[in-house]
Each structure stands twice: as structure tokens, then as C-alpha cells.
Length: 125
Image (cartoon, rainbow, N blue to C red; front, side):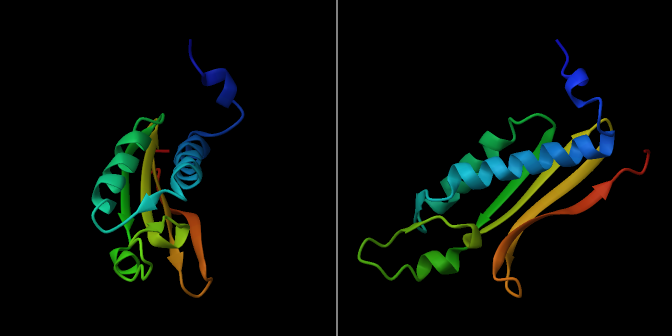
């Protein structure tokens, strides 16, 4: 069974953006709050990348957790709960030849971990 009828009201470009954005939202709301330290950060990054690459139309997910923040945990337990401002994430989605990069990272001037469409490559569309 095809899902085409559920997306017939949007363009190919919009579908590629949708898939990247919904994956970014899933990443944020699923993983924020996860306990992390400098030793577990690499495996958490990999788990996030691998699990979210399973989403429809997702080509790649790149996750970087800010190690400097982890180094400065400064509490007796030496770990932190993952927050949006510790993440730098790129999700690449593709649908029918339209490739999109959706990005989230902390933007100092906004003091906010912003999610946005960084790139749309629809050269054939």
C-alpha cells in the first residue's frame, strides 16, 4: 500500500522538507533529557544517527554533542541531561530527487537551539 494519497496535497519539495523536519522533531523530543557524559556521548550520537536514519526518506543523520559542555559538568555525578543547546544536528532527506538538509544548532545571538532548513537541492525540479 502506498502513502501517496496522504501526501497528494504537497509538492515533492515540501515532502522532502517535511520528512527532514519531522525526523528532527523526533530526535529532539525523544533524546533531550537523556543522561550523557563525555564517555557515553559517542555512543549516544551513534544511536541517534542510526535510529533516525530508519525514518522514511532519510539519507543521513549527523549528531554532534558539545564535549566542552560535558567537560564542565561540574556536579558530583559528572554527567548532564542532554539539552538542545548541546546538539549540532544535520538531517539529510530526499524524496523523488529533491534533497534537503535540515539543521539544528545553538545560535548564540538568538540564545536558542534553532531548527531550520539549511539547504534545498531541487536542481531537477
